[in-house]
Length: 537
Image (cartoon, one colour):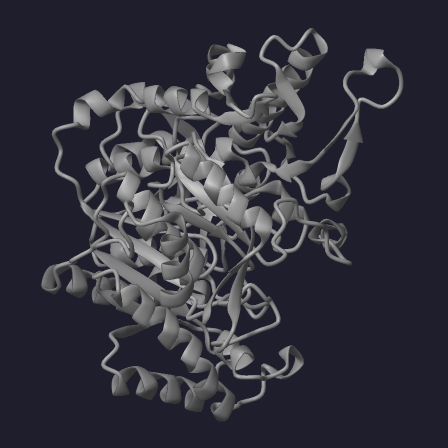
């Protein structure tokens, strides 16, 4: 693999070197000053890559996104891929890296997976500065009359650490601050990460930061971050982090990597800043949304695209034979054995995601992400299932063959962009009630029987409506392992209720978060963390 200097990658997409802030030879941030030069450029086409319900067998959504870019380059089609930044939590926890795999990766992958250009550090520092200022404000006299029992803002760490889910702070003498119960969340679950990714520019970011509700006072009135008078301090920490990061694939094609909210506990899309820049620079922009289509894609189509005034032109839905067999009931240890019956049963999971996506009016292309263990009979059966339902599909062999193994998908996407007009529309209208919007997602996307709310969730909804904030999009936080809120229910569960235990207003981000089931905003480490497996490298 021979990487090119980042100036050369930038030149391929029309970025002058004067707009680059370089981090060594192969990474750079792109200044917002470029927007004045390209603002009159027409927007290119937008392709969203998503996947079936994830399993430990792997689906390869990020790999497929990078493969599609390299495949398009092989057929002389100019494109850019926009991805999310990896979080150190999964890198050292369960998943390992998040930069693709095999012959389709973004590089330098180890840098990207670790400290990269410091965006996660800036976010974590900003989040914890806000928390420190809140506690200090109370300690120093509490001019804003903040109720310590109603502080909403949490500290953050970009690491999986279950010990921090519930903590006691201010222990010891009064010199150590106010004693209270508190908690941490992982950086990528914080509202500040969502704001980074949902903001259109620096000015919008600053306004949204000021709009964050950090606590309530003793009169049950919201306390906003702007009341703490630290918006400029946050901007100083975040100014460079607001600039998109430019890197390259193994085959020297351009990639923006910027922002990294999880899709199970946040909205799971890269920054609108990087997406809008790419759309002005290239005829085709590829982006991926986290986890499966019921999470990342739903949130991209109902939140990010709506806020960013984007019109997705095509969706690529990635599936693997291994994952489909797992949904069909095969044990993980037996995945390498041919099992046509389980494959056909597990295909129901693909179908539900496919027909859910069709509700948005965007054309969908299926991608069969090839694993070396897939048998000819299994491939033939899956192709026959697609053909029988009139589903457009392509065989993807990027992991093993790079761009050369990705041209079939590239050609299918180009054909779709040229022949099918997207009629994109969100699933729900913003003027519907909070409960109507939650229930529409639950019934239309998850195929739930209904929604069951705790008393706290119902009170949360009343409190949000009392602030006249009910007309915002909904971000449901739930397990990525199932259409339901129970990770053990694979494939397409039936006759279940979505259990909503809490509803939170992310006022700065501009959406409402409904926490379903036992979802946690601070993950824990598995029995054998990825960090331990690195010992043998």
